[in-house]
Length: 140
Image: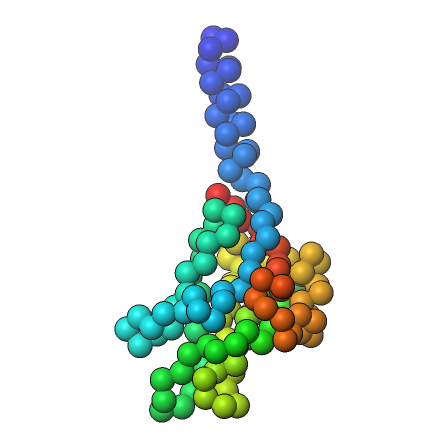
């Protein structure tokens, strides 16, 4: 009987470890991280054992192939209560165009407003992508 009690306790302990999020420092992709895959620009980043795929959106599309040239900054967007999405901005190779890539808060990833509040209103604009870190809570 004692064996089963220990087994239940260990099972609950392992479950509890998987329920809580692990906060990690993360960064927007560098412009060089993006590759053209089936006419879509995609970047895969992996920091602190967490991999994320970013898809590019062009705010003002043109008929020419565009790609991120320089990191512009990051901002918190679509905030609902304390959860937000994070949007990374890049200058395009086409003059006057901006390209964005977004990390969305979902059931596996949470981007909270408080630890990342400094990102609002582009406080890290005109820096390198690694100079603009943000905190992501990852549920595993």
